[in-house]
Length: 466
Length: 102
Image (cartoon, rainbow over all chains, first blue to last red; front, side, top):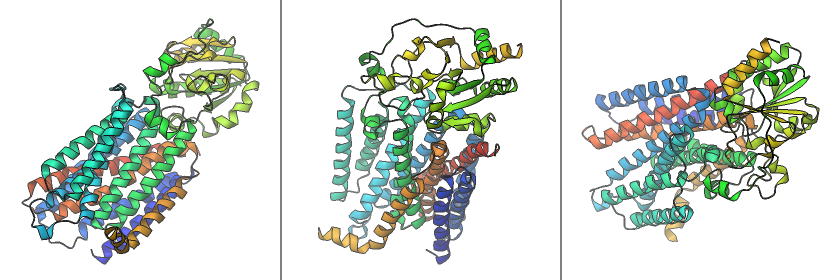
């Protein structure tokens, strides 16, 4: 490797570290992203230009063609995607990275087929190649399943005893990989069997996990892609891949734990527990007794109009209905009428931690109006009206007072302390946790049924007439 | 066992780098506010696209007559660059929205 290329890789590695560091603080995040992007560009261009081998023009043409084609595709998707679809997009991109690692592994394994005994790759090299194939495959199919689930195009799939099946399959996979390394096989049949088994495992690994836990899974798979990149880095003795990959691997893992903590879930229960699906519905009792009070847009508008302070609790339903712009209109209208309005942001509101902040920022909501859970909770007793839009489990008092509830112990927004509560929901259906919410049967609660966008638009219209 | 010791002695520098990189990654992300989890995940995802460097090396090392290797390498480069460009672009778009208000 030319010394110039080594220096470029060194610079790129430093930009990755500085970039990640800056990404962790709100004020510098954008700069951090640009710094890493610049370093990545440098590493890519350097790899192509500074190679020491004689390269035929055809290969150069193909590489540049691939970069142009893929670059345009990536750019267009990134520019066109709606902000509500962000989590599934990250998952899709991540799957592509995994696929890239697995293809590299395949090519490298193929190079070893049919060469003379003396020229064969060492066991250490074969094990890196095989690890790249296995990890790349698992992240590829796993990410695609996560993508399809967040998309709504795939339902949870739980085979009977799926945990046992998955764990056994994983052990078989490992044993098989060790076997291939030990016998020093160069059989392409064996490697394709391993490939298919890894792809199937990636599918089965993510398939039973509920949609609510998907962000954690995506973060975990992201970490795995980093590890796959680092392994291929070892293969080529390439420092920028090694360090870059390991950074993503460890940072991704820490982020995964941080997300679990925000949701009050352990990683083990995300992977092995069937939370947020059919099974939870059957076992939970919940307090479903009592009657609910329905309200209309005009009544709700009156209530909001004559209050001094209002707290809006946006949830996943708001994101689905694309109602982030209408809610901002409502907030501005109320502010103009002299009502103080704030947003209470639960750490996992939306589809993943921080997602709701992105959505509200998109519709120009003032950053200062977004209040985090721990800061807003003491303010609820002095709040006249809480408007819950499409949120359910994050405002369920069962998390405080029902030890048998699957969400018991989860930090929630204590909206039941407010003087009045308006809940906008499409129906009485349960949330991700699959349990009833006693908040809806609370004396103080008025239910405003309907799609978040429609209901809020009506509310805005009523308020304008007052 | 001998093989294991030999592996360590031959790759000592690599192992140092590996361990230090793990700690750097942990330290960098440790105290990140929840607000930034989504952009951070997206940004880290773009970084994991560094695997594209390997895909390019695969193509550079391929024999021009080896269509299988070139084909797989081509697909690997396309997928890798989608990950990189898309990842950075989408992270930038997300962060852009935070910035406007300040």
